Amino acid sequence: MPGFELWSDEERKEVNEVLETGILMRYGFDGPRKGKWKAKEFEEAICKRFGSKYAQLTSSGTSALTTALAALGIGAGDEVIMPSFTFVASFEAVLSVGAVPVLVDIDETLTLNPDAVRKAITPKTKCAMPVHMCGSMADMDALVSICKEHNLILLEDACQSIGASYKGKHVGTIGHAGTFSFDFVKTITCGEGGAVMTNDKDVYIKCDGYSDHGHDHKGPDRGADLHPFLGYNYRISELHAAVGLAQIRRLDQFLKIQKQNHGQLKNILSQVPEISFRKIPDPAGDSCTFLSWFLPTEELTRAVVNEFKTQNILAGNFYWYDNNWHYIRKWDHLKNSSSLSPLNDSQQEALKKLQSQDLSESDTIMSRCISSSISLLWTEDQLREKGEKMMSVIKKLLHVAQVK
Ligand SMILES: Cc1ncc(COP(=O)(O)O)c(C=O)c1O
Image (tube, rainbow, N blue to C red; front, side):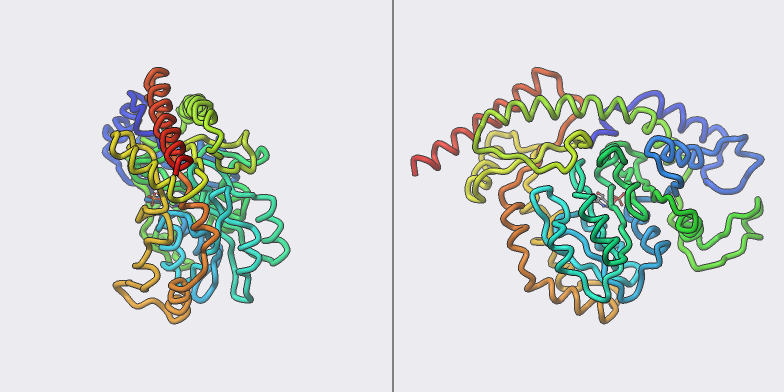
């Protein structure tokens, strides 16, 4: 994901303004900071760009999720339904507030299968957490309606899909709260950073306090702040926020190039009738960070991945099924509750169940899926060459499979 690909003087200018004042912290020091409030400005820009009433910056996407869960009142023993295909941070955040991650099947949207969500609901379910993976979105109409029907909180992990939308609303702003990540490989980056977005003032005030030791932030003297509840330090620094502020101004430019390159690669791969593409609930809202596509069988997909490797064209093409970060199959540390400090009983019990849970529907999808990341730096010639090389490998192996 491309924020870091198009580095510019705009990021340097914003960072230098912070370095000139020397005030690297987002709170306090009102005099010496000479009117520079980069984190506040970035939060305002997030609200404006994505149509959220409130935004709270944090130190990472992971801490944004943790902050949102806490602010939404999700904790010990509460079950949070999430997809089997996500990033480890989604369940880490749930575990960190004492809650129980319940992982369920995805469908060809590569996000939560609404039927699987319905089946997983128990009296302990408190929240459904769709993860808008790889630049695109979950079926939000279905999920909103399930959450309304069962009185569940809807928390969107939109860390990978900055700039994607669903039926005119930006992902991350549809549920009770949503999160972005601005880590180094996201659509826009701060180096490290995250944000919680919400339209609920009470949730926002809780995020604001929780991410800064519970401070109420009511006056200019931090030492005099009250602590209405417990919190932790998930603050972003002014340096990181300064980078993000420059990047958000460039987001539309990034998205435009991303969409063009995505369209061209898709046109090339569409020439192979055996390739099918990820289902996108609202195609107009795809941020186009990745082009995710399927082959008919796992065997063929593995052969293609191996041949991409041999021909040195695998870089940027992700076979998540074998990947340690993103798919449940390789999360032995989670299934074995390999935690440095003891997990609570309900967490341990739930994680043990994952060892034998049937996620064959997800396996069938993920074992045939390759996601090609879309670069902003490709020239037209490079893109064509890349697509044609990929296509020729796929055609060759399809032919071999047919001859067999
Ligand atoms: C789906 C998802 N959620 C959460 C995160 C966590 O973000 P961060 O790396 O900023 O902690 C990521 C990061 O890759 C992610 O992909």
